[in-house]
Picture 1 (cartoon, helix red, strand yellow):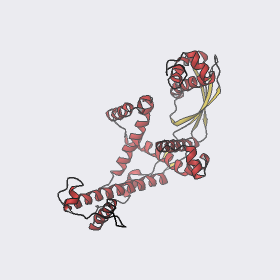
Picture 2: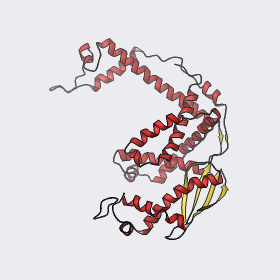
Picture 3: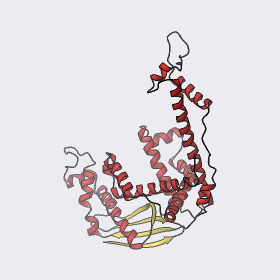
Picture 4: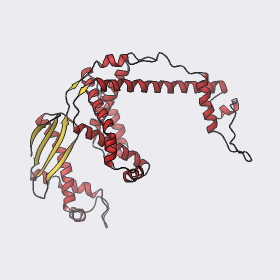
Length: 341
């Protein structure tokens, strides 16, 4: 049984005090030990095959209790939301206040609910942002791209100081793909330049629309929302760095900065992102915009089929994708207002 009380905080904040009774808390021990046993190396045992008492002795009772708490709180949180009927934003800030074998688990959590949002006339804003009446590609545009491309294909010739840039001939372009001659190659370059100009122009217009929405909306942004956006930025940075085999510590050392320095620098961007998330969500409600079940299921399956996806909680993947896909549909809706090329 989960017992919880709720208190409202300033700026649409919520503070919850909760207790998971000892019998229910203890019921998570087997699940916690199984999870820990599958992720830790214990001498003399294959992963996932060590007895529970060996896992506990190897890792320590507190590690087991903390994993139990993680599972228990994850299950309890949706029930607390349903019981007290609030709509949280982002990840709650959880603090365990009492944890011991054979005792109830007590904890507090703080989160934010959707604050009051006063939207401007978003349709008018999107329509009034200047729209291009056509995208032109000049001969110079194409020639500049071709010149840079030829430079990239330059080869070092023995006895020459400068690499030799290839000539643009029919024979040369035939080696690059299914081109019959230079004229056809140039036409393809022009089309690529045009598509890139369209993409750049669309991106610029999108930013103008969203910036105008943020500037003209009235939102009392809570600190929890800002902290959540900073957390997301930090997680993204860690993910990007891991792909380069760079640690966050090494990255910060190279910059001569601390994690707190980054968070301070990111704060304006976090505030902007937090406001935009709320604005798009409010427009989605007003315009009844949401992904279809077919669209959502298709994207969920793509993620869950990946090796990394197999370890993810499908309900959390669904929640994330629902929000991300809804936001994208709202942005597409705004861009479509008076948009033409």
